[in-house]
Image (cartoon, rainbow, N blue to C red; front, side):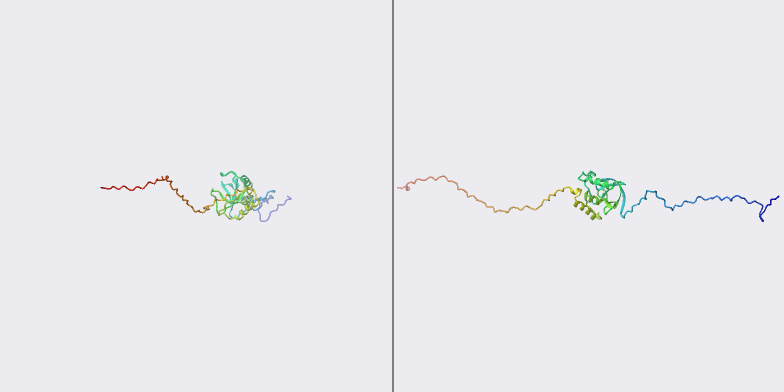
Length: 238
């Protein structure tokens, strides 16, 4: 035969396979997907920035406005503005007063349904159990806004004097510009009665007039007719 079989020296007579060597099957699971890559932001949206609160402040959502100086927050608590006394708007057994409804509507426009920042002072609650707070929204103090617009008067501050200068300045501006409640006529107070005693008239000397008694009238005296003298008759004894 014309074919020559060649054998490698030192090898057994097994033919070398012409197929590729199979790759060993991996027994471990798939490699984890790296998580350190930033998640892409969809176009047209911006990540929501978490506001940083100043020390001493807390965030709250206003559920409902009661009137011009108070509102309800989540959790069922009522907040009252420090230093703000608005006219009555028919809530809490208060009668409706001039500009009371206007103050309540303005308060609705300012804070209702919004997230506000609350800041306490020395006194935490008032006599009704309402939280006493300074209220901030977008950097503005709503307490001062209501005073500046003439929709409230400055309420007694007590020990809550941290922003007393700001609140007094806001009320003073409304007074000078005669805004809203400062256009109402104010009654002239009646001066209180004085206790000064009324001076007594000078004493005058009392002159006693003694009436001179009128002598009684005597009956007319009868004129005696003179009689001739008669000597007494002597008795002569014999």
